[in-house]
Picture 1 (tube, rainbow, N blue to C red):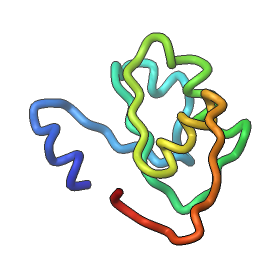
Picture 2 (spheres, rainbow, N blue to C red; picture 1 turned 30 degrees about the vertical axis):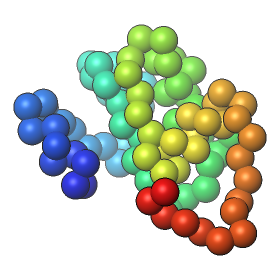
Picture 3 (cartoon, one colour; picture 1 turned 60 degrees about the vertical axis):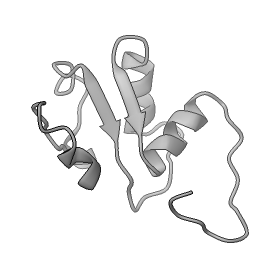
Length: 87
């Protein structure tokens, strides 16, 4: 949420992954995929959003969201031996 506070000149709406559908986010010009407690689903909602909007909207990923974007572009992901947040 600290990052979102930097966008004070923009209208923001936070939508739970359980409430997202492609029509609901069609009105936005930018999308932020946030961190989440879940693991990536190969055919999950983030992939569907990327399929539809990757060429027409700015999409930024944080943590799991970044991993979803990387996976979409077939970047090889692997677990580190030691978890290092914030590097």
